Image 1 (spheres, rainbow, N blue to C red):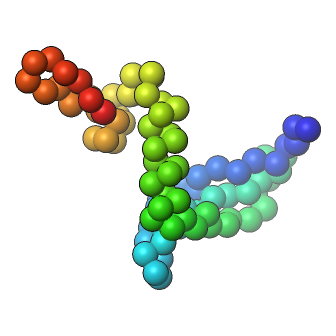
Image 2: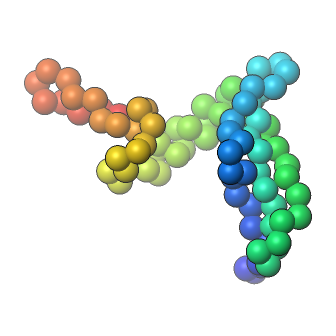
Length: 84
């Protein structure tokens, strides 16, 4: 069932560390284009690594955009090997 609820990043507020070494990503919740709340997705380092791996796998076939963070830019090694 598709609804008009939306969850997305909060502009200007990025990922941060919280007590205990967890990571918190602020997300805004809206419905019908109207802001309702901000909630934080908290991840343990292990959960963040799993999410990172899943995103890298999902994005692996797509070339990174010019403004992508360094971890998405290809690294060329001697012999022509390329890794991300």
